[in-house]
Length: 219
Length: 232
Image (tube, rainbow over the protein chains, first blue to last red):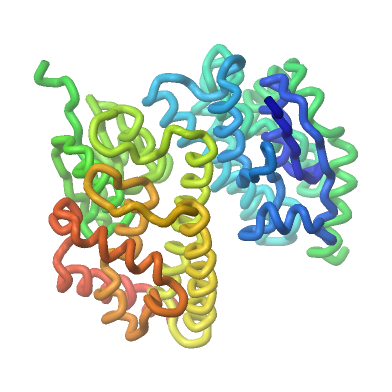
């Protein structure tokens, strides 16, 4: 049975990284295609005509879009190992809630940290830490958001960790000082091969973000 | 035994997000207690159940809260396996439905709220955007049902149907308050419109939607509030 898996992605995308971690967790072989977002391939435009964004998973020629939808799809199709979502409905609802929280809140606030200056940046930093502290409370004393094992919420949030160094340098903040539990959790996640092999080098990400910042901020 | 399957829904009558959950419970035939919240004076219970967002809807099942309408809908579908299944069994079809549900939720509905809250050029711009999104949705509906849409009944209603009813069900009230048509049944949205009309005929839907005048009143109030605070 043909099981052709292709991932259209962009190396620094924290959304694409989620899919890469999920594929690694499940041990799925796939073809990775790097997209130039300033010059999107005809394949990307054909596979995601609605949003024209990465990541897009193409399974046996059929596209699945939106990172969390892709991760749930992977979990449901390759359901023989490494479950990402809990099996019990209430816990699944909790997992979906927190992944949705990460989606709604973390990206927007963090963007203000690296792409703005002055008052807007200060407000963004404040918001960013409030959000991280809410996540710290939710994590509590658990090793992972999923409990004893790495799961859906961990996967949805850990990818932002690769951008933390960029936030710290460009925003002049110290995340470990404000949210030590988050950093401890992140380092625990990085001990997993699927995470360590997926997350790009933080310095590389910083260079990329610093370049992007120039488009928004003249310094 | 009395505590088993105790279900309550905290909501606000005019909220389409609450409407989604209300419809889902009714389609599954789940008995529940409805608690109307005063959003200007939120109950301590609501704040306890949803400390992160402090919003409705909140579904409480045997004392445990679930929030965010789309999360609640999937929870209901997974917990009560009787009645219509909101999501199909096939993972690919599930992914498609989730994609379009998210599309209606974020890209269509949130823009419709903006239309209500703005006027002039800003409103015109958003109206054009919604029209474009509705064209995409029409294509989406065709791609989900390549062999044509099955006739709707209370046994086969799905997640996307719940979103369609909660988003567009009060379209006449929306048109009255805005003075413009959002869904074009001829040019842009023939499939969407015919699906909506079929859903509005269902017994459960008729019983769930608030009366026209009440919705008009709520929409007018929201619009006035938004326009007033924008001009301050």
